[in-house]
Length: 308
Length: 307
Image (cartoon, rainbow over the protein chains, first blue to last red):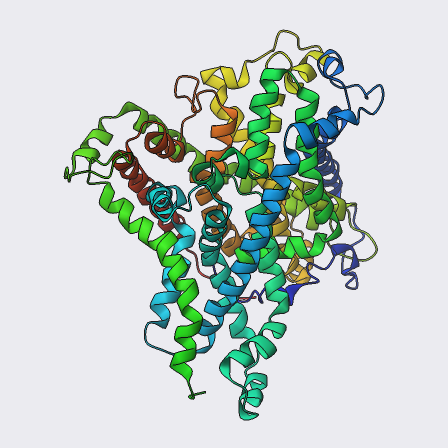
């Protein structure tokens, strides 16, 4: 996961520059570009087709969530006769979507703060201090990225059980933090390395303690990196399915992704498909809306890691 | 930076390292140990059985089925996904008609495409799986409905219900949900390739297709390679678990036609109460994951191009 010359993510915010604006003076010959235009028609077709394939299922789900059960099956592709908002209220209260939302916000809120705090502490020490075992600890963290998590989950289930934290939200929060640390430490270590040392040294001469330098000088300077890795972790934890499925089977503590799968089963029995779609759309919309608003930050946050 | 340095280092590393050791490192070590025991997971009693679990695994037909499907996922999914993504990214960034003096340009509306393609990436794989499980429903689902709507009444596959199509249906969902991420990733990489290279090549009479293979791919190789490993790990792990577990009957059916290693570990441990044997299968999964990463990095090694 290294390229020689890709600058770290936070710094690259603002990229990619849109190709349309890259207006270098034209050395292009005014020759008729036959392959170019044939390719252009073909590529446009394929691009439109894929956009259609991505957007349609989502739009279809939104549309279906406003229909009544009968018309979902009789005329799946027609517009709803009227907006059946009762689907949404039924999903929100009777199908426990409100509980799932609440649990998810609690778990993701707690684990996101914990991940950023613990991750940046470890990364800062590993990036800026020389001590025996530094490399070993770094590779211990980073190695966790390529191991199949399921292997660890079998014993972890019983570790949590013995600690009395199985099927509890605090237990889930700690597990989320632990499994987010490898990427967070990997990302932030290289980020802290790129920050200039002079500011920290000046603070040191002024008599600030290491702890104070970290919280008052280094963390504010690392803000772009924290935002990128924060978005990455937020989406990963919000959408997490495998960890809660294995470690959190208490119906009261279900998170959103589990709740939807449960809803798909239970509403399937009841034949309440419109309620299921309302629940699905309800879970989809906040992340989609946040993505559209913070589009650039989300993209740089999610792709930054893989570009390193 | 000497004063109180070690106290600070210990103080800052203690909490993250302890958490990581208890919840990640220690379970990994334990699971390798358990793979040599007959532990059920239900009772605290177990004894060492040597390599019994491993020899049992080699004779277990479901294990071989899962292994085959997992390998197919790990090899075919990155190939299809990254191939499509490279193509889309090239079109979006370089494939456009020449205009306003720029020698190369993206197609019109490339900004829109990049936003739209990325949609599935921000959705939970669980939502995607539930949505597609419904769409694949042979009688009431949208896909067969669409086939009927365009007059293909005779083509009504059972999709997830047919052992011959179920695995492909599941894989298609994973492709659908991951292509966008790589389009955006490769677009960022392509944006850092200097425009002069394309201009020079086009001046020399190279076609777009030539520039794709001779300029884009070589200069993007590092990104493609790490993308391959990333996709391979996803296809062996969490993503395939979610889609197979949510979408297929059984899960893993019909007739074990979609079961994958990560799901088989889960079922053996938590449904069948054979935690010891489950960790053995998990160790096999670990070996395959690491082998895949090593293979991609070794086979794909090329001279690094500086630009």
